[in-house]
Length: 426
Ligand SMILES: Cc1cc2nc3c(=O)[nH]c(=O)nc-3n(C[C@H](O)[C@H](O)[C@H](O)COP(=O)(O)OP(=O)(O)OC[C@H]3O[C@@H](n4cnc5c(N)ncnc54)[C@H](O)[C@@H]3O)c2cc1C
Image (cartoon, rainbow, N blue to C red; front, top):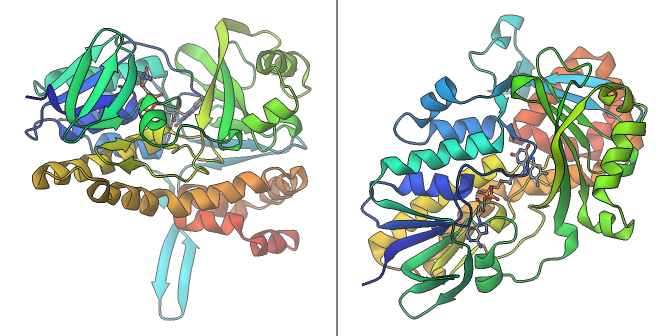
């Protein structure tokens, strides 16, 4: 008799979403996590609309509980600051509507009354709080057993089961879901051991009190500084008047330029003309910490015989924005339906689980192609200056940008040369 039907490795957003979607479905689920919760996770802490929508699709009032009880800061938009220091504010509210008729297929502006929506589409929520919230929900389900404080060391596939080894134990199951983050043992052991550096970004963040000139509506700030391109510096207002600030850079550039992330962070906040005055009276809480982000530019097989990879383990971070929580949760959702199907058919072969690869490709393929191009374009400071300058003078264009950033099908326009050519003459 095997210990479990399904073993999930890692209790971050991907692993918890998968467990919550599969709870009460007749499977014996084990979830092995190296840390003891609540635990901190190095992150910008920004929860986009994708996360909020994924929470809404979780069972048993989890979304309502998140809205009612979890400490978080609502955010109503993004402030983009171009390398020339000009900025535009892009509210999340969509003021555009898709119109399809005989002689027109496109987006039209709505009258201003349609702007108001009931909830802010995004939040900033410390990962120690958000991850603990999702993790705590697992205890409601007797068919989900949490094995906490155990780091897995290896995964082996046998004829009819998998064997997962921790420092002091072995666990068996019919299949395993690797939700064990960027340095996933499941990925390294069962799929893709080595990945080129160009598919990673490095991020560093710290918490600060007393940063000057925060946006009154808690817009998150993406500050495109020349030395970081296509990465950016961020300032995200967080609970209790604190701020999560940090920056991301492509890992190959960090290595090529021999960048010391901590030193560069300190240099920017003390000396950069845009940042230094804002950080002048600030206090750093704790110490800055760095971690890698696995970008969706890496294409590989995200499932195989008796295994499936989710979230960061599957390289599902948006190559332009660095957003990964919503995608991790989405992969947990997609995996849940494929896994249920496998158990119904008692088929855990690579062929059966390839349905997951196909669904992931369908969900993220075009989106990542688009955002990878956006990431490439963001290497050109002049192009970023042009977009921000033009949009700063033109409300209609700003609203179009909002629609483009929040609507996938419009995002594609941002990657088309014609869009920038038209901008020049606007
Ligand atoms: C600096 C930085 C800033 C970021 N900012 C944002 C942001 O603002 N918004 C956003 O959406 N995304 C952001 N991201 C990306 C986001 O943090 C990840 O994409 C997201 O956490 C992925 O969720 P996950 O569940 O796949 O992995 P994780 O959250 O990493 O969870 C993996 C879990 O697996 C456990 N684990 C790992 N190894 C083992 C092992 N061997 N045995 C057992 N357990 C193990 C870990 O302890 C962890 O709990 C940022 C990332 C970084 C590094």
